[in-house]
Length: 125
Image (tube, rainbow, N blue to C red; front, top):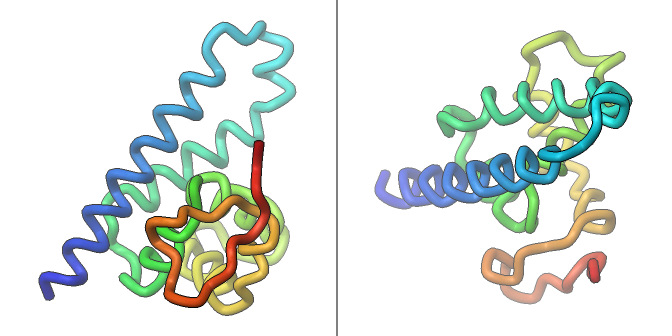
């Protein structure tokens, strides 16, 4: 049980940091730019609110810890699937990410959370 709580705590801390950084990146944008990104912003907020309590399967949260920005990873997957998943079906989005593991090729991984032998995915500058 202690392991699960630690995973949830680490995930919550990382998710909070990602969300704060995301919001900070929006500061100072003009209204036109914000309107253009309205769907993305709404999705980021939805994902953050859904995941912040850590109430999902610890294996999914542990998998998401591998990424530098799990908020971005889940947000983008949610947007990809929005036509095929029901509102509120975050469990399906998390399962898809953990099952396919293809996001590891598209997003920067966090070396502190890589499993032994896992190669680094895309490197961002």
